Amino acid sequence: MKAKRPVSTAVTGLAAAAVMVSLPMCAAAGNSGPTGGAGTGAGAAELPKVNMAAVLEAAQIDPQRPDQTLTDGAAKHVKKVERELAERGVLEQKYVDGHYGTATLDAYSAFQRSLGYEGLAANGIPGHRSLTALGDHAFDVTHIVRPGKRVTLDGATFNKRTKDMLLESQRLTGVTFDVEQGSYNPGGDPTSAGTHDGGGAVDLYVDGMSPKKRTQVVRAMRKVGFAAWYRSPAQGDWGPHIHAVALADPDLSEPARAQTGDYYLGKNGLANDLPDDGPKVKPIRTWEGYQRTQ
Image (tube, rainbow, N blue to C red):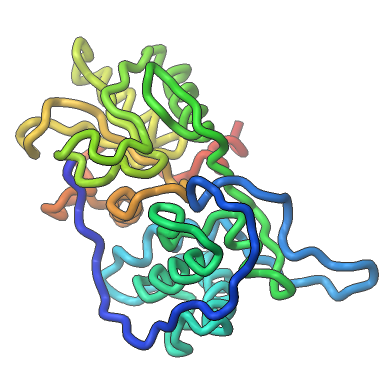
């Protein structure tokens, strides 16, 4: 389904990363790696902490903002990340401000490429491996988000985190989902505009669902941590379906990331930039936040 193009900001003077860090290659930026951050020796001073979940939230929202507003609770963690990006020569010092805008996205992507990542694995969204490498001797990573290995549900490919979210949504609604399109599906549907190229994305058929049941499903998906909407043919060149993107998934494609940012900002995630037309679920929680409430 068609996605809103992310806000772009001209960024100049970004140099390629000069330091190569030897790490195993991973299929996507969010693939899980070793637990913890840089680590400290016995008797060593404790390193500052960077909350990965908070940084991921800012990485989704800040590029979609019309201004330089900081994401509550994330700015101090983002600033530590930006400081290290600047130390590596991929971010201009003036952007070390706690706002994870397009300059920081581009810089983090450059850092990921310096680790040997390519394509979606260099999407500018921190994964556990890359964030741990960035924080080497500078900070430890907490509140880690792991997409997990790739699995299947109803014949479609997802990461384990997204599958778990879908199964919980099914449990809450009593509906067995009929998957139209899963994740990691580049070029699978031209109307998707790249939202399904990475992880965290799903489209569900709604044949046989009443409007009331559709709303219940969208509400349940939002409750467990999806940015979810019912899409109608009146909105675009597609059949009726439910479209959802998992919040805070490090493997998101750029269009999917833009949609999650729009969701946080009360928009519908489409190119028309209209207000959110789905059932309100407050507060907005990620999958990890939802699990802490259970």
